[in-house]
Length: 224
Image 1 (cartoon, helix red, strand yellow):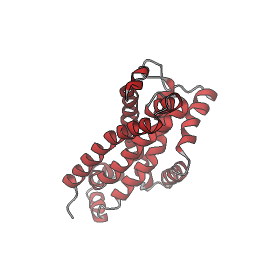
Image 2 (tube, helix red, strand yellow; image 1 turned 180 degrees about the vertical axis):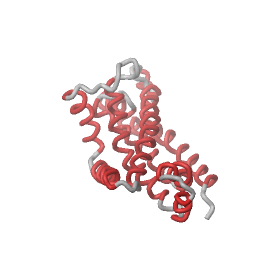
Image 3 (cartoon, one colour; image 1 turned 45 degrees about the vertical axis):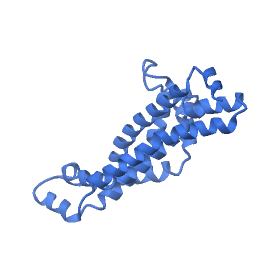
């Protein structure tokens, strides 16, 4: 019943899901860094930074991810010649897909972290300023450590959504799971079986993530 899988060695089924895992991990780290910076901008006392952070989040999260991914490929690469390095590290389209996923997902990470910042009692920030800490020090040493503990659950949801959103990278030819599934469906008759195989693959990727992050959220929850 599964004999047709042997016909797809480049990429293989496991190879395609490995590309999906790479996209998720690299985009997840980049989104966490950029999203944290955006959250810091949104609570900054500097109006220009607050305005940029607010505008970025409100614009980017309302643009379809497919449009952003296509822009990184057709716009940045084909028009402006942006390649994000050499092909020594994956392909150009892979790197541009990571860039698009980071740009999009960071807006949701930002809002999750900002909600965590709002759970930190205002008195703690005021006490930090009273002992001479500036805004950056207060955010880094006092506010963000507590905020991250409060939003592990929401960040897990963002990570799971990111794992599924990596399928959009197929639009620019990245050889991840969705592209292989599309090729199989076009060439094979077992459409339902193929869809079930790939659905199971994504469950295997996302379910442990949700369970682990749920456990971590309970273990590190801030006691009020």
